[in-house]
Image 1 (cartoon, helix red, strand yellow):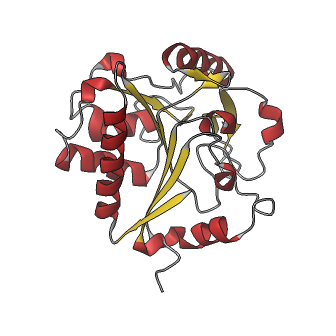
Image 2: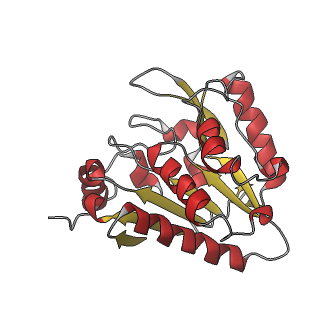
Length: 239
């Protein structure tokens, strides 16, 4: 695990973008696949891409998938797809064939199965599961990541790719990538900014593995890299 601390959120977005560009340079003969998350911090990153980095990537060589989605209409402000679409997919005029959204308006069980089949057909298979080039994650104040919340029974997931999930605070239904698929990625990048994340980041790093029950602490790629991109306000060193 590597931790990269930057002075400001903008510096974090720049550093993470440069890392994605480097990963893109290593992939030849096929498109690179990226699974993106929802939330305010990723939206700020996507807007950074639109305003500052519109020409930094070969966008036609990138396929975008989703880590998780709320069971809402794609026009809802709560939809991860909707927010990504208005913040960078639409403004950058990305090819529709390179965008693979989770259909949150569908029955969650059927959609989890449908999206699992799509990823199996589009993503290289390793260890019997899809292996994404890059998975972009955030971390909630409660230690959740993707839509995997504290108390989730990971033993029940077996070798599932996408599963149903419920936000325990709002009881909202969701569809999320399983931890086994997250840990099967080539690169997992956590994007964490803001002083409200400092406590959970401190606990996530300080508590020993085995005592830490936060879902984010269970992200440990079996053969890939794990990098935390953190701004100074969220870091342990902002005293």
